Amino acid sequence: MGLIHTKMLVHYLRHEKYRLLYNINSMRLLILVIVLIDFYYISAQEFTLPEDTEVWNPVPRIVDTFDNLAPSDAIILFDKDSLNNWQKINGNPADWEVKSNIFTIKPGTGDILTKQKFSSVQFHIEWRAPRLSDESGQNRGNSGIFFQERYELQILDSYNNKTYTNGQAGSIYKQFIPLVNASREPYVWQNYDVIFIAPTFNDNGSINTKANMTVFHNGILVQYKVILEGATTYIGKPKYDFHNNGSILLQDHGSKISFRNIWVREIEVP
Ligand code: MG
Image (cartoon, rainbow, N blue to C red; front, side, top):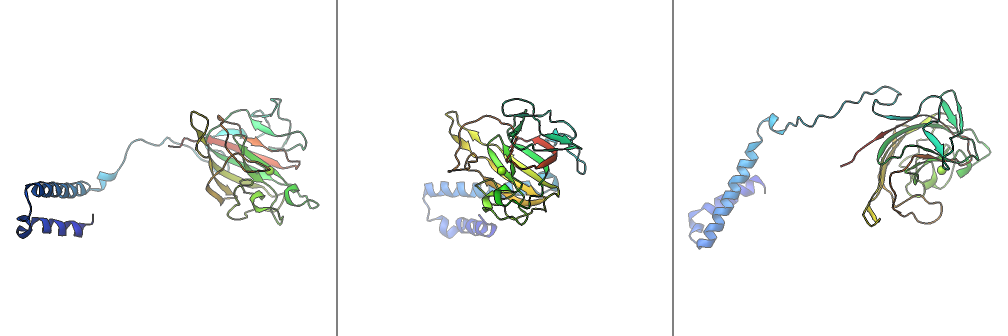
């Protein structure tokens, strides 16, 4: 209720001429209204100092940050010379080529995924597509990051490379077109920063809250809180099937994509 309206109401209700028109019950109602109005004024007047609206607890914990390096509370998935945090789907060691602080897909050897499983995460990865002038569309520098082994953020050389737009770089494959195309030329390093919020399920296995993703491609917002309709599918409509926490998976789609500086932070959402 606005202040002017409140004042008018008080004036109206308190006016002798009208007060006499009310019976006892109306008077009780009138008193209640006046008490409520007084309470409204008192409540409004409680917060008169700047300190009244300051919050001092809880205190956010400290995270140290560095230019081009993982923050202090991140889990490093790759930063130097080892794929120890990764494995093949069958559990065998990941054997993609590791050299000079980067690693590169060995086409035909299959996807690799993190040994650790995650729920909601903030994720950083740097990737580089090869020059494949003879290839086009989905065959030019294709890979992908599957959160919880199911929800794909597409990796593709989308620099002057036409394909279906919900399958280009920065798309949530077959679900969401990126807001813009922020792709760099092939063989130039690119990066994704992602917020992946995991889905939650009811006790009977049905979906409770759907997954959502926010993605920056080379620092540019390309997906904002898009709500996924289910696990990524190549054919047909996506749908949710119950699952627990899952690995982050990198796709072997036959292209020699390279990667470096991969880290993840587990995040809790209210
Ligand atoms: Mg892909």
